[in-house]
Amino acid sequence: MNDLHPSFPTPPPVPWTPADVFFGLVFFVLWMVGFAGLGAVAERLSLPFDLGLLVVFGELVLLVPVWYIGLVKYRRSWADLGLRPFRWNAVAMGCGLMVLSALFNMVYAALLALFDLQVQPDFSQLFTETSYPLALFFGGAVVAPVVEEIFFRGFVFAGLRTRWGWQNAAVVSAGLFALAHFVPTSILPIFLLGLIFALLYQVSGSIWPAILMHMLTNTLALSAAYAISQGWVPAG
Image (tube, rainbow, N blue to C red):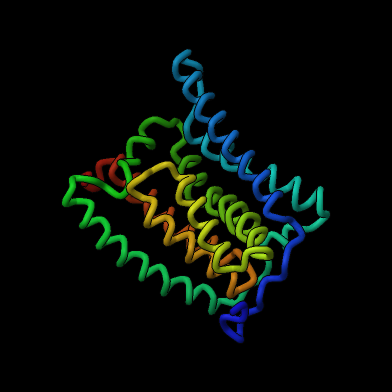
């Protein structure tokens, strides 16, 4: 089952274990709690901070456990975390899977609308609350996809795959990826994206195809949010 397609290289095993992954996840949770706490304190005390810059900084910190475990503890390289060359047919596969994901999202959004719910909250106000909208856009459209794919696919998925098999690792890493976004109504669509990104890594041996698909998703969402914030298109 590892050789999903003969033209794609199977990603090599990595030395870090589920225990290492657990350590990285604990760091992730503690950082998210601390990050939210810092933001709340800064807002309460009216301290100067900017959401756009915080998004970039907050994402980059997630590379700390990955760097320590992968590069320091096991003396591996970023290539072992999936940053390898890839074949463009993996991107073509990714585009096809993203179309299926979009169709699922349309049906899912229609079902939620029956209960007056939305898949995602309105993010357009974020662009009106920052002095650096380009930093916010860059952080969400570029930095977040790169960092999150390194963390959830290159580190978490790869670390679980050796012991649990790629299918189980894909499900678990996708579930963690969905929960990490903290939006209950978006768990299913993001879980599906997590499965797609894990599959792309598994069949291509590189996380770059997943990064590109992740960038595409975030860029479209943020572009729509920015257009709404500028009044170019109506909300809703």
